[in-house]
Image 1 (cartoon, rainbow, N blue to C red):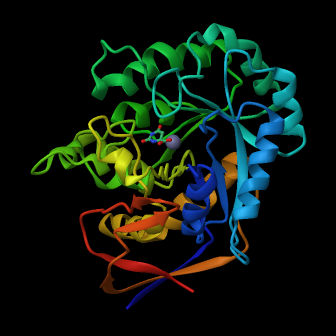
Image 2 (image 1 turned 180 degrees about the horizontal axis):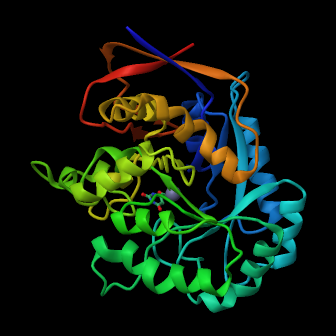
Image 3 (image 1 turned 90 degrees about the vertical axis):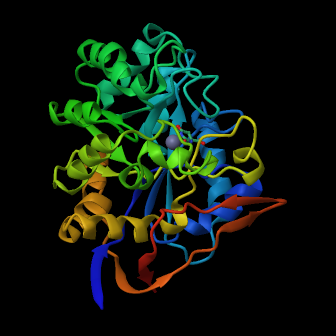
Length: 343
Ligand code: DOR
Ligand code: ZN
């Protein structure tokens, strides 16, 4: 029997949604301390007041005794008011602003079309040290979907960083070797890595047929990219840390002619991660990746609490959870889970 103690992990990229879905999925992040809550609701969380109200709804849905604490973000639009952002940051209400290129992913219609229009907000964020979390994909339909991250780095992110050099940036859910190399080359940039991109390659999307539950954005990539992500995750480099991007959708919206992007990994995230780190012979690096590096980037203390992971008999998570009148499919990593968080 193998056991591992670590400080309570944080999830630096999480979709909690709202209403019945929020109530269904929030308990599934029970092993995490801080969770950075994505603002892509409909309508999006654009102002400080909206973030405060959303935070209240999350706290109201939080089961008694669950240690999880929501850390809020704002959704950047071309009309975002820099003063409102600065006020929300000064109040300790938000820890980051999220940039969605318009049309890049789920509920990104209100995102940014012309980066020039948000430069004043980014300059203000740079002054106050507020990080920008970036969905790093170009939206030009002429660009191959597998190239959209690399193209974004070259044509949007790199020029942006030269324009606002002091801006602290998180390249969210990095999926490519190019993305990893870009982050490694700079100081005030970090990247989150998801559980599903550490486990799967794009083959999973087409294994024996079309697999909508493995469709996410950025889309899964080739094996060589997954290897680059794994190396970054276990490297001990503090610029890489966990952001699950757990993104629940109703089963009916995933299994559709035009299925939504997102993998709901929260219920199995830590079990899957321990499996990956063990495969990489790097269990001693798991705490850094899941509980230390992100806290350091966001300037907060790592949790004083500890969780215990134990490896034992294979266990099966439920295939689906109820969410109001809907069901949500739990991520299937394609291997038997043996690690679990023990109470
Ligand atoms: O797969 C994804 N799902 N990628 C995103 O960027 C958004 C997310 C969602 O909100 O469903
Ligand atoms: Zn996301």
